[in-house]
Length: 377
Image (cartoon, rainbow, N blue to C red; front, side):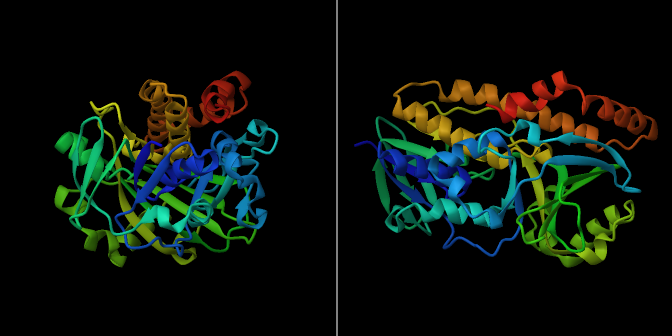
């Protein structure tokens, strides 16, 4: 039986392991750099129907609905006065038991972990080097080595595996944007609320049936390289509060008092597609390609790419990278376009954007092309 090393216990790596568990096609082991997985993280994720369909293959349809929410639409609003621009009906893309879903990221991680035997997951394993050949040899920082038929790198945007394979070319680039994530109190709109402001946008949505809401703001912010890698700055409450005050001053919501448990992180994106020379090394999720978060497809594409790779290995085909590049281009174009449109600051441009949004949000052909091609994959 072929052996697979999975680097990273995030959504992509864990979903890939679940597919193996359901099909028993390979043997595998997951190597995680951290010493444990934090289940106290209460931040949310959005899962469109293209990923829910895949999750249902491994029993997600039996997951407690109390820990999920099924928003019916996304409302576009002006941040300054909360006036509604338009809305898009998300439920029209649902089918059978596949519904657009929001939830805590930690709840999904726990679900994926619960179906994996504990002896399959090794903590405190950081890859120091990779020897390529007919088999892949991994050298870890704890001096241990192991050999596998396949290597699956699912270790995220800051992928150490990718850095080893491609050196400096494997590093992502700063997108001149900061994300501010937290939970928000005293909010009662159970749709997805997308607030558009000059050089920023923020999104609020429920993450379960308990009236808990996720808050995520994407703010244009130029930083020097030393500031980007300065964790003290990003964890500094004054820095985070200044960001929150900046967008709160341009919004009629009381974000200062109601947003809590904030975390701040710079947004990095991939510079180009990079494919390993060895045909037994694969990159999935953000390790393959990371795009701006303005299309809410990060988690869904992590699941999709893991499924595509599993099918490729199971069927002994070699279409993974060709299909993944095509799919990623679809998502990346939409993500960059959304980021540009959401952050307009010139009043005239905003006026015409809002008119366009009102028209396009009700144009069936546009919605089928822009969202349907992604959600119904």
